[in-house]
Image (cartoon, rainbow, N blue to C red):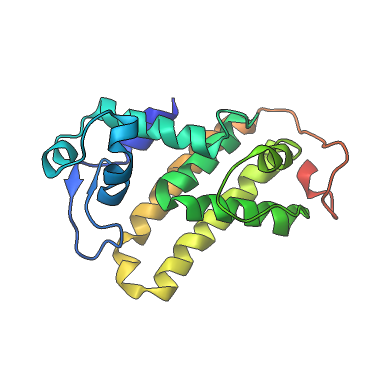
Length: 197
């Protein structure tokens, strides 16, 4: 279900000179394609293979990002796993570093902020209420987008699209988690026990 959501928000080939990501096709930057096409698709990266990218091929990139962002599907919560993958899809390893920073700053963990999701990061994420963590991630992601525009006003033309996508992602999952029972963490690392909210 996550792949269709990602591709719903991605268009075809674009080369917008204002976009810091450069050339993209279905949300995949040319730099990402050039570095991963051989591994993910088994094709040699070139102008023609990049421009001819299909939805089926793009879905394989989403799956690759999913495996990296979730430590091969080790994050227990589907909504958290999708949120982390979304961060990596939109921001690469910077997005994963932001996730690790959130866990450290909001929940008191001492994870390496290296953009590599491994056992310790997964253990930390799995120890927190998915409801609370998801809400914190939405707040952090929104602030991240706004900070991009503050640092580089030329990116303001993209902010509505970024926020609309984030709001759609939030609505998609808030309907789901509103009916879930509240979770209480054991050995909670939170100083204010905010993970039960």
